Image (cartoon, rainbow, N blue to C red; front, top):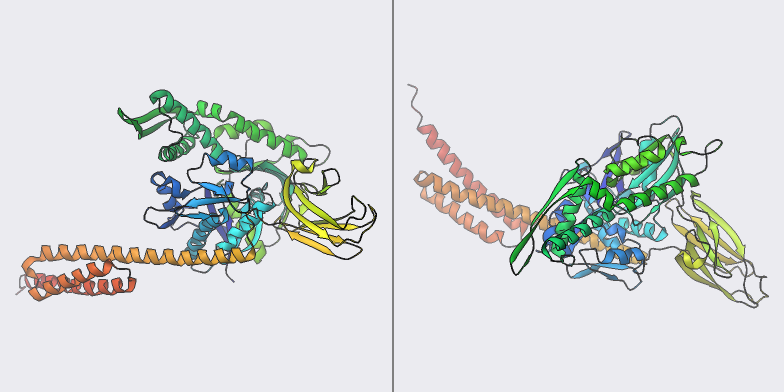
Length: 614
C-alpha cells in the first residue's frame, strides 16, 4: 500500500511529510529544501515554473508570477477581502462567470484551485521522487476558520493535482496532533497559528492518544502578507519624500519592495535594525534613482501594532469561549501555548502572547513544519500506521437557515464536534404555499443578511395547506472534512431536495476531472521540456569538450579520427537545435564514443613515451 502524504498547503510556503516506521518524516523538495514556496509562474520563455524556481524570477516577471493564492481560493469577487487585495497583487484578477475570482497568468485565466493544484502537483512529484514510489492520496490542511466554500475549493485543488483527498483537517488541529502524539497526561493547549495569509486560534485538550478541539477562532485575512504590506506602504511614502516619485503603481518596483519588505521583516526578528538597499528602483529626467534607508525593529512594531492587537483580541475571545476545565476558567489554566506559522517568529508577537498567558510559549517545535507533521500523523491514522490516536475536531462557525423575518435560525452551533448532524422541522409562512426557499447560512450574526450565504435551493410540490400546517424537515450533515450537506423534505408528500455545499467557483465533478487531466498533461509536457533541456545541456557540454580536446591534442590525433569527431560534433549541433530528445541522446552517445578514442590514443602515446626499464 502506498503512503498517504500529509500536506500543509500554506499561503507563503508549503510543507509535506509521511509516516515511516511509525514516525513522521518531513520530505524535502527537489531543490533540497524542507518547505516549498507556494508560488507558480510562466516564465518569459513560456515555461511553467513552480516553487523556488518561480519565486526566484518573480522580480523580473511580476505580472506572471502568482503567490498568496490561498487568500483567493473559494472566495467571491464581492468579498471585501478580495477588494482589499486586488490593488496589492502584482498579477491581474477578475470576476469569474460564477461570481468567484479568476487569475491571469501569461495569456490564460485560471481559477485559484488550478493554481493551488500546480503547487500540489510539484509537491506530489517531489514526494514520489524522494520516496521512489507513486503517491495517490493526501491529507491536506486548511485554516480552522476556512468556511465550507474554501474547504471544498481546497479539496478540488487536491483532486486536480491527482490526489484522492482522504481528509481536510484544520491547521491548528494538525499542529496539536504533532505536539500531542506521545503525550500521556491530559493538557489543555492553545495553538496560535499566524501564517502568511491567515490567522487561527484553537483551544484543544490533548493526551492519552486523544486530540479534542474545544474552540476555534481567527481571521481568514490576517497574516504575514499584511505585515509586509504595511512595510511596503511605509517604504513607498519614504521614497516619495526623498525623490518626489510615486512608485505605488510600478509593478517591477513593487515586487522589489515586496521582497525587500519580507527580507527586512525576517531580519528584524533577530536584529534591532536592518538596511534596505534598492539601486535603480526608479528614474526620472535627471537619471536613475536609488533607495537606501534603515528600518528598525521599533518602527516595524509601530507599523503593525494594530494587527498584533487584533490577533490578541481574537485570542482572548476564543480562549474565553472554550468550555472551562474544572470550576472556572483562567488563562493560567492553559498548560502550553504552541506557536506555528512564520509570523510567530516576530519577538513582539511572542511577547504579546506571553503577557496574556503569563508564561513563555512552547519553543520545541518547528513552526514551518509542525502542521505538515500533524497532517502526516492523521494520514498515518487513516492508513493504520499510527494506532490509538483519536481526533475530535469542531465546526468553526455556526450554520443556520433563514426563517420568517430574515432571522438566522441556528442548526449547528459553532464549536460543535464533527462529524455531526442536526434535523429540525419548519413550516410555511403563508396559506397555500406550495414551495419554500431554503437559504443556508454560515456565521454568528442573528440576522440572515449579516451572515455568509452558502447555498439557496427550492423545495416545491408542497400540497396547499394553511400556514403552519406543512411539516418541512431540514437536515444538516457535516462530514469529517467540515463539508456540509443539506436536505429538505416535505413530510406529507415525501418530496425532498438536497444540496452539497460547493466552492464559490462552482466546479462540477466533470470540471475537476477535466482540470485534473489538463494538469497531468502539463506535468507530462513539463517533464518533456526538462528532458529536452537536460539532453541539450549534456550535448552542448560534450560539443565544447570535443572542440577543446581536438585543439589541445593537435597533431597527436590521427587525421581520420579528427575528421570523425568534427563531423559527429557538427551533427550533434544540428540535432541539439531540434526537439527530438532520443535523436540528441543518440548523437551524444556517438560523439562520446569518438571522444573516448581520442583519450585512448593519447593514453597509448603517453605509455609508449615512458623510458624502457631495461
